[in-house]
Image (cartoon, rainbow, N blue to C red; front, top):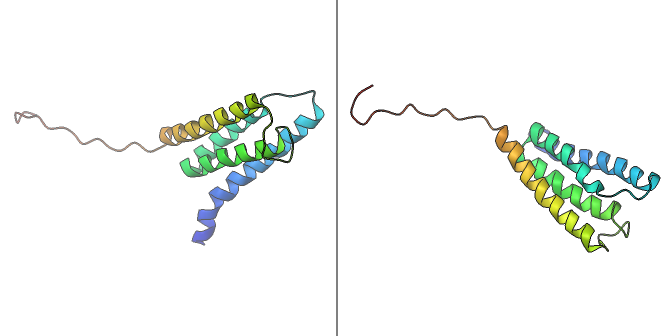
Length: 124
């Protein structure tokens, strides 16, 4: 049972990336030259960070970058990105996704109680 509890965040991360990639792949082939589709992965990455924490959200951001390079950038079905601007966009997305995942996890971390400080001079 503990294996399922540990595997659920990883499975959810990959499921979210799969669903968003499917939608973006459809948008890429049905609309007229869409740009910057990779940044649509940021909101699902934030939701994964809210629900499961820091590590699954970072895994989600990395998996999103890999699937975007494979399915969304030319040449399609290859990890090679032909345009250097798109490669820079992908690198910026990875940085922004990792920073966003870390920030969301830190914002949702429970606050530790601060010990009451005592006076140096023995006064209350």
